[in-house]
Length: 232
Image 1 (tube, rainbow, N blue to C red):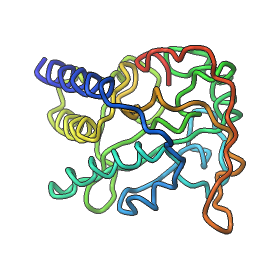
Image 2 (tube, rainbow, N blue to C red):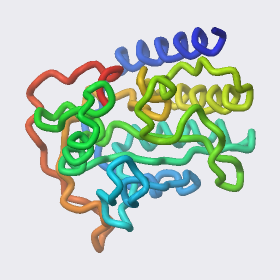
Image 3 (cartoon, one colour):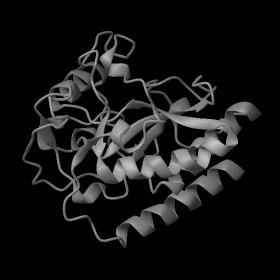
Image 4 (cartoon, rainbow, N blue to C red):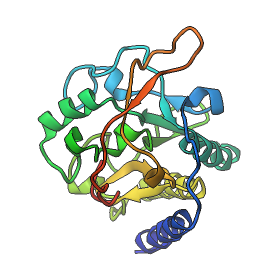
């Protein structure tokens, strides 16, 4: 109960602060490594080790996020590192075609949103899927593995393993300090505080160009975005 109440209060306060913060005039997509190279990246969808059983991204895909997301992760990482821990990113920006492929497999809107109306926040670059690692980069024991779409993956850990509870608390407190909002059905899913100022984009390539930049074209997202607690 302590974990449930404390995290609920934390995320409600974070959400309230986000609503009262003016959105950035321009929040570009960036390579996370250019903002904080100490954050580990292991994009699951760049490998067959995901729920679809095949790679949805190129093997050398970069971790692409909105700048405010990268800055929030930098804050969270800075809070964790003195304690001997860090963040590992499992997913970040997700192209609409990859979102569609994932939705076709899962077919459960409680976990994966359809990209057809621009409601999937991963396609906005405003979301990351993250876990906790130790100082050597080893993934810590958490409630479930990535993309385990069951009740055990809920944001509020109700299990009795004190080690998992400790890791769970560390990750969620760190992300709250970075301004992130959690998602009720997935403990690994974190939404950037300025998500409402973003929209779906189509990145031409997840690989860096010669100048390290990407070209992005806006996708129609005129329909109001759903509450972040309901869509991945």
